Image (cartoon, rainbow, N blue to C red; front, side, top):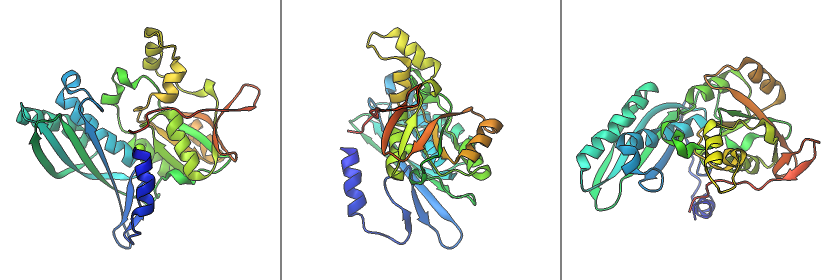
Length: 306
Ligand SMILES: [Mg+2]
């Protein structure tokens, strides 16, 4: 449902002079006048869909609700400024849940010097729902959009992929510093964060940029959790399958021209390792580059909303 709806919305929403970038990327960009641009994003997390409250507890749910929004600001290379937190609380233990949720997210807000500017609270007979709106600011280095990749650009990723369901999806560190630092010090053409799955989110960059992406399977950084998942289950999925499709890794995918990519890979300037997994190419679509160099079509896989 969601992607159809976003398509409809992108057509239907009137152009507004203050809206520099509307729905379809990781966040929107608002003009604040001559000097500054505001980056806003919202993500709603629901119990039993995005977390399981009885398993993870309200602190972890609160942390995740803020962290996913910070990850979207990172994906835009925006500096976090403030967040609004709205919650629908289950009637039983409403106050305890609300307080614990804030205890989970406040240390993260502090880490990023983020002001919690307010929010709204309701109590109902349904499950916990947390809706966070995060506000950021563009820097002099500019923003990172999904639509700037060009054929010949190198596909870079931070961190490792797959198996986030084993815990990473609740505890990840949003790549805000890495994004700001890389955007400030190197030429980057495009970027996104991986929420739906490495192959699916990469295909989004390629699609928005009007080009294709070719990856080498042996270059994909596979997490230990993905290997554990593959070993411990009989579903036939390999660790690589998990890395390509699991989602909620909340790492960055970046498009960098070859010279910038070469420097980034050599410098490794961030708190997290950066790996080259392939290149953007002219031919649209997602491809696997086989050992002999030939291109094999690859079905983007991951979490499709609704
Ligand atoms: Mg995103």
